[in-house]
Length: 286
Image (cartoon, rainbow, N blue to C red; front, side, top):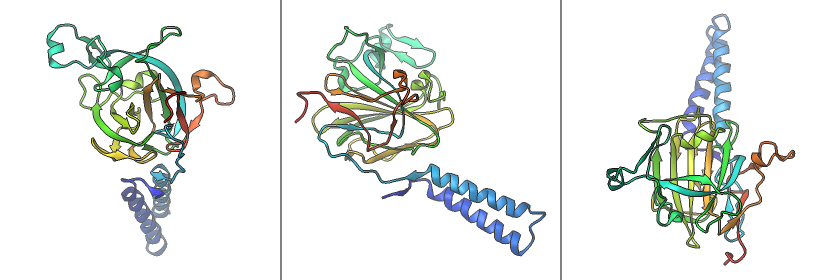
C-alpha cells in the first residue's frame, strides 16, 4: 500500500506536531518577535521533506515471465560483464599464507569460488574484455540513488532469500562511506543478499550506503519468500544498489552513464519494481 516506508511515520508526525504547536503558541500566546512562528514553519517544512523522503508509492509490477525488474529507483551508472577472481577467505585459507590484504576492502583469497554463480560468499570481480568471455561471468548493473529518489528497494524477481550478509570496510565497525556515484563506493558499508529464483538461477543484490546515507534497513531475512517487486529494504539518503546476474542467462538493453548517450547523459532513470533491467536469453525462457 502506498504511503510512508517503515520508520517514516515517527519523524513526520513529530515534526508536524512541533510545527503546529509552535504556530498556535505564537498566534495565541506570544510570538517572541516572530521566532516561534518561524520555528513552527521550519518544523512543518522539515515534516514535508521527511514525508517526501520516506514516500513509498505503489508500483505496477510487470508480469512477463523470467524478467528481472530494477531493485531500486535511480540512474543506471554502468552495466559491465565481470569475472570473479577472489573471494573472502576461510580460516584455513588465512592460515595458508596466500591471503591478499587490500587497504580499502580487506582480506581476499586469490581464487574465486569453485562455483562462482552460487554467490556463496562475497567475491572480487574484474571486467571481462571482449573475446575473453566465460560461462561463469556475470553482468553487474549499478544504480545510483540520489536523495530525491524513492529509497525503498524491491525484489527483482520471485525468489527465496538464501543469504544475507552485512559487510563493512577493513578494520571498521562501520563504513567506509564514499560518495555513492564513485567506483570506490562498492566497498562502502553494504548488505549483500543472494536470491534463488523460481527457475533455479541465483542472483546477487548489494545495497550500498553512500557518503551521507548511513543506515540500510532490511525488511526481509534469510529463508523469506518474496514476490517480484516486493519491498525488501530501504537505504536512507543517497546510496547505490548493485545487481549481479549470470551473463549466460540474461541480456539487457539498459542505457547507462558509461554509454554517453545524449538522451540519457546520466543513464536511464529506473523505477524499482517496474523497469525491466534484464531479460532471459533465447533458450532460457520457460
